[in-house]
Image (cartoon, rainbow, N blue to C red; front, side):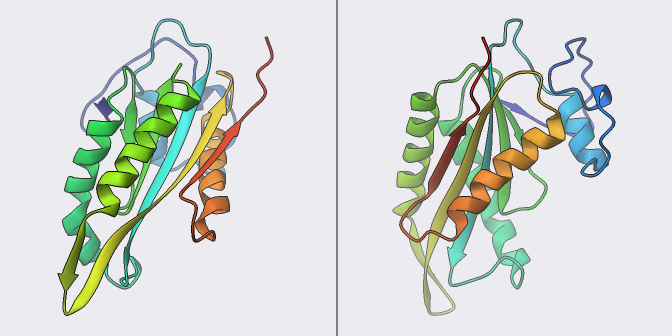
Length: 182
């Protein structure tokens, strides 16, 4: 898995997910732009997948306890690397409670298996903090797309899938497969 590092530069001549090939500046944060510029891509790409993952530790909210969440950031990132160890998987994180992964040519079944395995691993890890029983809850939004999608639209579409599953208690995964023109 390729992990995005702001200090590492990588040039690619492929225009797939290239933020410079569009004029949309609504979501163009510099770090997100750099992530898309340095993304690792295969030679042949038929479709791409965006996976937006966010975890929640009950009963603590990220907005009130960001330092508490920071302690879980690296172990959860390690678990994500373990379960999403696909060729050309690219991991981006902006906050310590959420992750965005871009993969290429990975099937729905492979993605579902990786997410389910990650979910099962984290669901069985309960602990006590300040006399509260805590558990890690995971929610994921997945968006499959053609290769010519605007990178910022791609990120937003993956996050939208996450937003659709966020309010559901029993579900932890939302998939949308954009109809591909062949």
